Length: 179
Image 1 (spheres, rainbow, N blue to C red):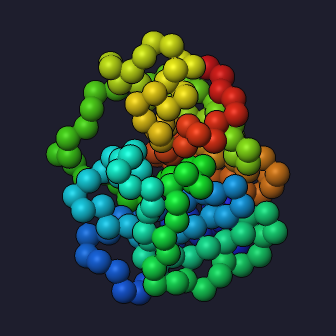
Image 2: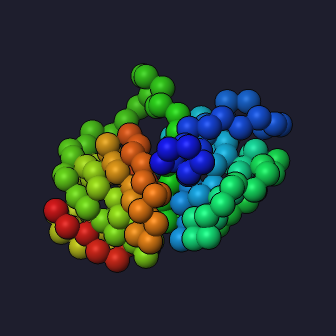
């Protein structure tokens, strides 16, 4: 988006008290866009959201914007905790550091829809992923599936549209997908 829309807000840096070495995130729930910083504790964002030993994410300097009613974002709060299962999309805002270990993947062009979003991009498939796409998209070994070079569109508000290098899509919220 341009101007006062969520797209303009995605790249905005927030000020306030937060731990050192944080990464900026945009979190999309069915009705909200939440921008804030997370302490990754040396891990990749995808590893954190796919870690099943915790059900929550904590963001610092978090700003919430209502996507259903629109309007300006609410003033930032110093700390916000949200359930991971409430998230439809997670969008890391910082580039991945070079030299960071990554799993070899191949990309498959895909369009997915959730209740409120359509995302088009390249699904990162690992060699160990099942060949059956239904099994993979059902959250076989990852709750959040990575789509690269992705476009995000809100299904009810055509002014909510943005692109991102990586979008992590919550498999629990998938309604459909097409190759």
